[in-house]
Amino acid sequence: MDQLIHIETTGSTNDDMMALVRTRRKDLTDGTTIWADYQTAGRGQQGNRWWSAKGENLLFSTVFFPDTPVSRQFLLTEMASLAVFDALQENGVERMSIKWPNDLYIGEKKVVGMRNETILSGALVDVFITGIGINVNQQHLDFEAPNPTSLINELGCETDRQALMEDLRRCMMRRYNQLLAEETALLHADYMARLFRRNGTHRFFETASRTCIEGSVAGIREDGHLLLRLLSGEVRQYAFKEIRNVFNDGMTLE
Image (tube, rainbow, N blue to C red; front, side, top):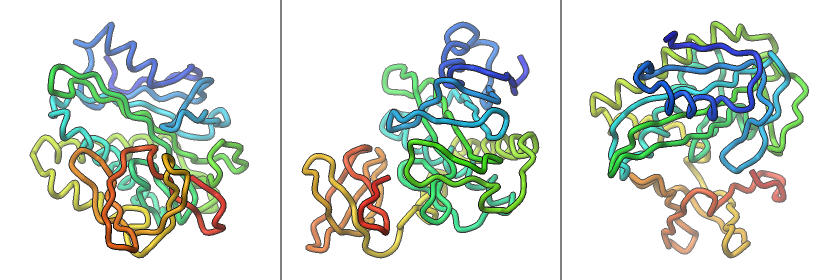
């Protein structure tokens, strides 16, 4: 089977990849990718719809078979986020950061969304599917995210989607090979160095208490929990969706 499967329209490339894994697993290899020009049911990590103009952006899902311990599966998220960061950086994109756990921002605007799904086998991650949407050549953005941007809006010119897709696949395999080589400390250090709002004190919104707090990033645990150090010195840990960023206007939440 061709490792890069290009289709015009689909509901969701993640759903397509999951179906392919269940029906043709033996034909798939690490890095097999389904790329669509248009998705009718794309979705992000928060359950938001991912609206994309046909043929203007990159919407794809890539599968890996890592046999990574479940306790360390956040390394897969780090790997995928770093690979997209690398590819965009190679294509001249600046001022980027990775917003925990896996979206990419330019300044305080979202340019990449990611939805990761896994199939477990006992205590191991047997299948890892990373579904990625990159705003490439769409100038007018009408997404549920409150702060979207695109490469064309940031770079001032169109990007060749096919060439970028090849760069992404190459960077994905390079970062995945780091994971296989147990270069996990390097992966984590690279991820932390690129983390959104890594330095300084910022405002966050606790979803459980529905209150705003101020604090700084104290680290990320191996299981992916975010550690925040409050102004009082207390360190709290948060799972995904338990904490949200508050942006500069003091009103907008991610």
